[in-house]
Image 1: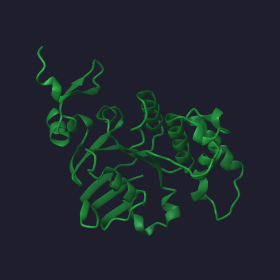
Image 2: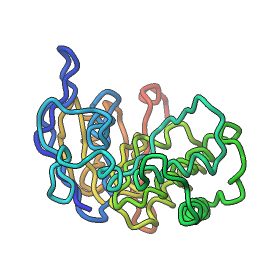
Image 3: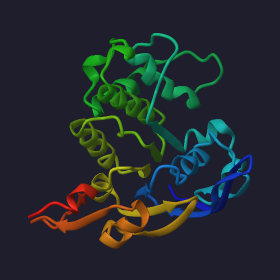
Length: 260
């Protein structure tokens, strides 16, 4: 699925969050959105998955304006894995994953054999099939995120949005989650804080600062020492390992005065 964003603007009171953002995502492309805290990454994604309505601008899914889709229809196009997922009630893992079937069902329609098959299949894809009857609240953060990914998979959408899904996970679960997503062959848009994760998984990166897109291109084009300094105000070295993969090494300020 293709996604196009043109001149998107979001304003809360007198504060402008997005200031004319343009974004284009090709079919089955893995796009990363990077930038410092407060740059507008999550706000941009929330407009695409319809939690926020922009003040101005255009969003199109496969050439059709997002506002022309019924909410249930756009939910068949785009699924979301967000950073935090809280429930006020005790739900089993199966019940949480089954929520992903909601866009495909009529009001009060009962779950059927096909729904249960898709739930089990999604849990198997994220290696959580043995947790089907566990309470969601008893799982670790990494396990919960894999369940939320399974919920998104049961929506059977051609596009997946990751709204900073790995920030509170240790590196093992970060890599597990991103490996699963990478293997799905879907259109993916992900807000990412960890630049090394962005370099590992993304086809292209869009760089945001102060509500603007200030650059876009391949990870190698965007993750340069100069750009990292300009965007994040930190010193870094960008290297390639023996297999040609990028790695970013950071230099904290207190190292500047250390003797060698």
